[in-house]
Length: 206
Image (cartoon, rainbow, N blue to C red; front, side, top):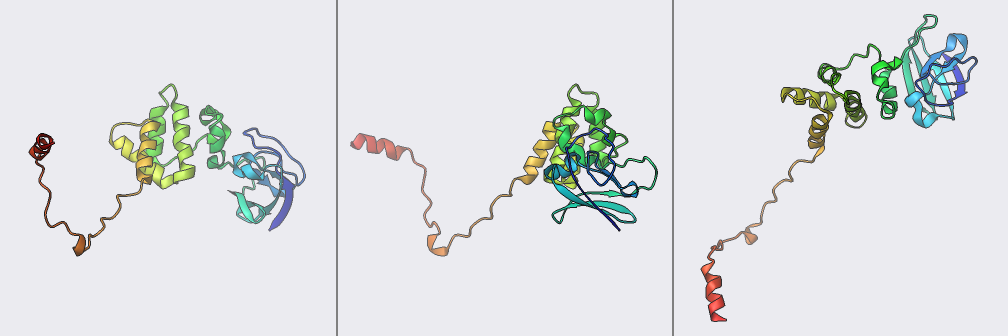
């Protein structure tokens, strides 16, 4: 295992080079050349602070204060760049167009239902923005929940982000509270009778 240390400079979708154990911005690592390229939304809270890069035989792990802020499979190919698109989803909120042509999102394979929604939204004017809203929901609700919501929306013949997010919101709502058993002493023995004529009699009396 190789341990390198450096500092994250800034998050970006740009591809920048770095030499020596100093982190620039790229969300990848190449310890064989003593280069550490990291950042992006992967380490949003790690920007500008020292990190440790652990190079194992099969993966690269970036830690900060004992917390993993990035982890990628290790590649030994020269000039190879590996992305984890989920690291860059927060950036899409500011740049939804990057979903269409950003390097981290090229050839991105999503779960089946989410992929169907993405293809359908591709023909909509604000399709990128809607898909970004759905992808962002994964960060809060988890991938299985969003995939299930997309599948339910497609089954209903719709695919808009509003519908998917509404399904997720309904899934988050707590169920109905359990019925409270009424003690025998408080059980109603004589149900009231709805008789509006009684009020008329009261008015005549007054």
